[in-house]
Length: 195
Image (cartoon, rainbow, N blue to C red; front, side, top):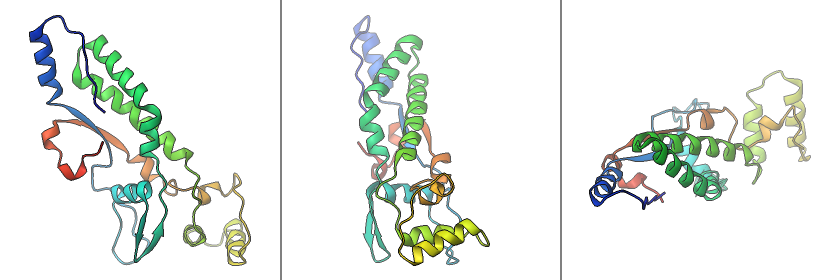
């Protein structure tokens, strides 16, 4: 997000502001090495950041096809004007670049979390639903759903099973580990920079 501030009292203030804007940026995403539990038994627990990227853009590899379930780009498209406004107003009120960036980053994290919660399509594959259900041993509701899947019966989302059928929220780790950081842009590797 590029934000330009036009009004300053003098050229020196404007120059200092431009310099400061070059020294800070906010990033929203998954920055640590948080991993999902390894339920494959193969010692290949995926990083949450890798799963987020895979869900956002989808993948087609020898392991199978995962359709895109975008949540970050829709959140940005829907909210970028609000974020710009928040930044401008916060900076105008407080004259603190880092504080303004933190405020807009917190807002963006919340909006992306809402976007994750709104994703229902494309629906999960039967194989993914079965994989999730296998964690619920000796559970009558789970056993009924497994039987429906095995007989190719359609499963409707109900309050009892929507957590199993809802994409992106199975363990809650994708949402809970989403964060932000305010840093110097020179500290960011080009491979991680996006629009």
